[in-house]
Amino acid sequence: MTGQTHRPHLRFDPEQGPGAATPYARYVHLAELHALQRPRSEEPAEYSFIVTTQVMELLFDLLHHDWTAARAALRADDLDAALAALRRGQHTQDVLVGSWDLLATMTPAEFGAFRPVLGEASGFQSSAFLRLEFLLGNRSEGLLEMYRDSPAEYDELFAALRTPGLYDEALAVLARRGLAVPAKPVTARHRHDEAVEAAWRAVYTDPQLADLVRLGEALLDTAERVTRWRQRHYSAVKRTMGGKPGTGGSSGLSWLKQSADQDVFPELWAVRNDL
Image (cartoon, rainbow, N blue to C red):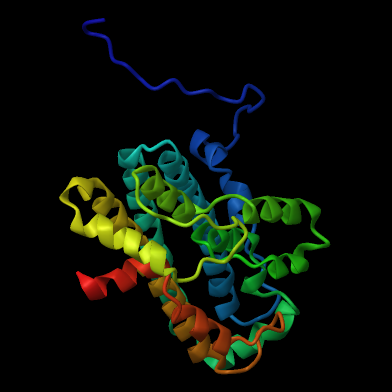
């Protein structure tokens, strides 16, 4: 109606009386959020470590939201929606990569001062991170063993292991467009495949498949950011603890180096040799 000011409809909790938290604080659960940082040592660097890892976990969830949206759009052959979701995810990835700056100056002495209170806790135990790895095609059923005593997480990851990932759905788009893409078990870890590389080569050399080139480049942008995150993780661990075993018993530095050297969506990198 002309002359009226339109305001967003805000729903307030009727049980909140005078003196209650602001609507913003209630909406983002501010009190709960700021009560989650509970250092177990007197080392000041532990607080930074807790905040940074909690931020990363939230960003893992956000990235999962973006990638699952992209996967659903690919399944529906909606390339525009898929590209938009991948772009959103790339912004999330940039923040994830930059979040390592918060730990960049932590010295071995500072980390060593609170490392004993971590016990067997390790970032490798992050189920949110593992969901992302499965979405990328980096699958390993053996990794589920650490969740045997956490049924909800185990069931969620078990289902994720058996659901086509982001790249699987991208290759399915190529197959539906008439390109020769071999069928593979969903649970198989994705490794370089000559036939898949040939399919991408056809995409990049056929002007009628220009929309699929945009998809390939968007996937490569995503893959490059995954590698940047892995490299920063490797550097941070190398700086703060060197080659000592991880708190969860992992091989630590050597595993991170191997992960950082592994190409994500390898055929998209390999096809560059012939273009």
